[in-house]
Length: 549
Image (cartoon, rainbow, N blue to C red; front, side, top):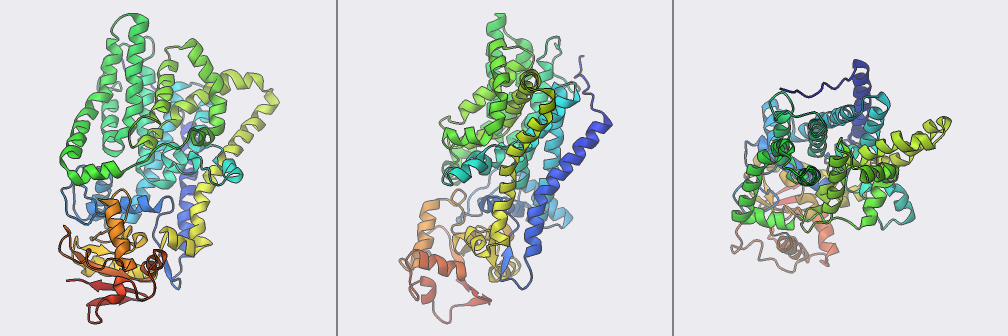
């Protein structure tokens, strides 16, 4: 049986990759270390451990917390009513079980996983580059451009702050940004890179072996299952590219491409049971179906993608033109179809368009390196090549540094802004969380301001009335009820018996007072102010927790 050609990567190459990867991952840790160091005991606030998209970060921690408490099925802990769990977000549940077994905190396990998957992603990207190119220069070019490549979002931000490019708000699209944000984005990119590397080999002329255990078949199946668990929509673009590739081969050869079909099935077949299960859950679990309906991540306007991929796209144009003109089998056909179909899927009519950016940088950088090696290096004089590459990297880096620095501003320079954005909470809330986790009724419902509620399921075993626009079901109804209660417009609905849940704990602190003032409540008008003086309560600094029995 044919086996995959051994990719020749020297020990010196791996040392270089390990050093660069380690430095990049370490760089993503610096803002967190700075934020933690800035959070002194005498401060009246607590850093919550997330910088990039703290709302979603809190939901990741809530999933890990569920696993730490022994759960194997995912529940929406930002939804107050009890509902059936589902086999979603298994990756984070497993991290929770790891936290339980090791005794580590959910937050520490999250960041350790981020480090591990980030390193794995960088290694996989280099493995892809080494699979495609024999020479050292294009391998390193691919690795660097894929690892830290970004766009001109920083320039667009300077010119027009109201227009945001994807390199500043779509972490799944860029490997370095992905490592900074969570562990499942880099793991998804790594899986796609390894899958694509295998297909580039088995689709080459002369490779006729059927999929097997030791020639890449089993690897594709396992990686497909991992993606189906952690980021199922990432399988759609590359799966669609395989379908298109089969059609192209059938058209060009005038026969059924049985070799390509067998290998493509290694990606499709393992993912099919997961797709059937997910469809069944969304059909029969009403709460999860509503969660899926609310989970809207539409694509921005095309300019956001053009600016976000910026110079990478410009550099890749000659390689793309050559691939379209020659449409060669060895690599170009498959990668071109992946890139084109992936770009088209960004505006497909479904609710998770933006998730299609996961892995899109792989074919884009593939053609960028092809362009550099086959076009630009012949157009640029030798003495200007190194400076030109340096300038290219310099223009790509600012968005990466902005992604690290902007959220840190809300901790280091402007805690008030951090409190408003949910990066921080007042110390009283942090003490209340500990009290709830230790003495509160498990799975009880807590009423609090949204910026506080988002963190309660992340650090306690309780659930909340409203905490997240996607993971609270139904989101708008629950948000209206919370605002009506704190604003004093409706003091009976949430504490009555008509709803399918019982509010057991009510928070009244700075964030709730701010919410009441923001939505029009004046001093004394909030329902919290009208609670009887003998209402059971616990006080933590300027935060009061009312106990509603």
